Length: 246
Image 1: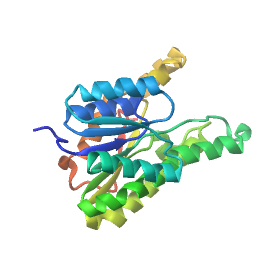
Image 2: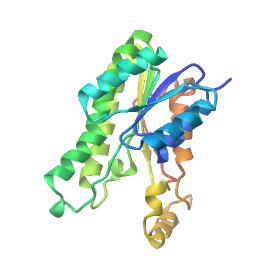
Image 3: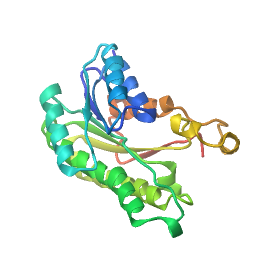
Image 4: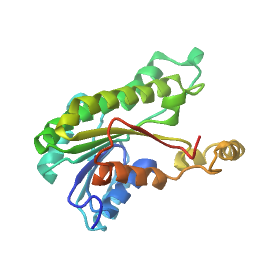
C-alpha cells in the first residue's frame, strides 16, 4: 500500500529543487499531483510527463500564488479536475538578499508577498473543500532562517518566521475539522541554486553541520510524505527542522 494512495496534492513552485523532489516523491507514493509554476513552461511539461509516467494523474498550472484571485481560481480548477484537495504544500519562494541598510522597500514587499501572502492565499483557497471532506494536511515550507534569523536576509527571515505563526494559528482553528497544519524548516539544502555559490563557503557550511553534509531535496520530500500521510495523523501545529542538527 502506497502512503498517499488516492490523495490529491497541490504543490506550489514545483518545477525545480525542493518542490520538484516533493512532487516526484508524492507521485511514487500514489498521490495525484497538481503543481504550479511561474514561468518555466518547458520544465513544467517535463515534470508533468515524469509524474504521469509513475501511474498517477498530474497537471501543471501557470499560476501566481501571490495573487489572491489566482489562488482561488487554482483551487477551483484543481477541485474540478481532480475531485478533491487532500494536501497543500506551500513551497513557492524567492529571495532578495541584502543588508537592511541597502534593502529597498520593493525588495521587502516582493519577498513578503511571494513567500508569506501566498501561504495565506492558498490556505484560504483550500480550507472550504478540506472542511467539507473533514480532512486535510497543509504543509508550509519555512526555513532555518525563519527560526534563527540571518544577516542580509531580514526580508526572507521575516517572511519565513511569519509562516510559523500563521501555521500554528491555522492548526488551532481547523483542528476540530481534522485539518492539520505543519511547517518544515529546511536547513542548508543543496540544489541548483547552491551550486552557483563559492564552493569553499559551501565546504565551510557542511563542516559546521553536525551531520557533516548539506541536505538533499529528497530529505525534505521524505518528511513531506510523512506529514501528508496518515502516519502523522496526530501531528499538527508543529515545526520540523530538517537541517542535519544545524
